[in-house]
Length: 147
View 1 (cartoon, rainbow, N blue to C red):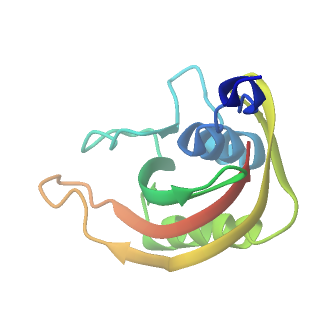
View 2: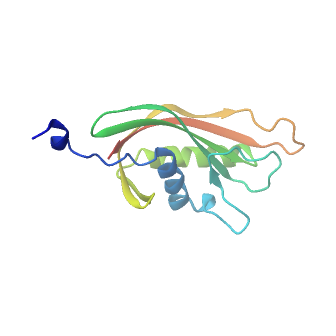
View 3: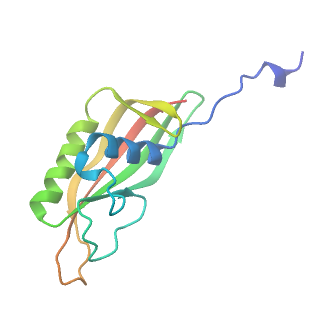
């Protein structure tokens, strides 16, 4: 009997970025896709785009072992007013700290065991060249995902 045959085959970890985008669209009607386009993406919205609110999800870093992954994710929320962007960012922050977080993502059900806030929502400059002022709040989270 070889050692290789005794090693368990592990399935890949779910994509933390895809999970977060699917979870945001499923839990926040204001971020659900419309006939005008998507409101959650890995891309920054183009300056002056009227499709607000909008959320950008970006994988920053993370660690993993045989059973768990701990990805670090940035979530930026864009809005047409300070209050709109801040309110949505805080609602997302509050919901992420609830338990359990599950969503169908990438053809499977994904469970997040824990969320740690690395950096709470804070306003960041954005779209300073546009004539219409836009607002951006960004937060950073570390997730605990199982295979």
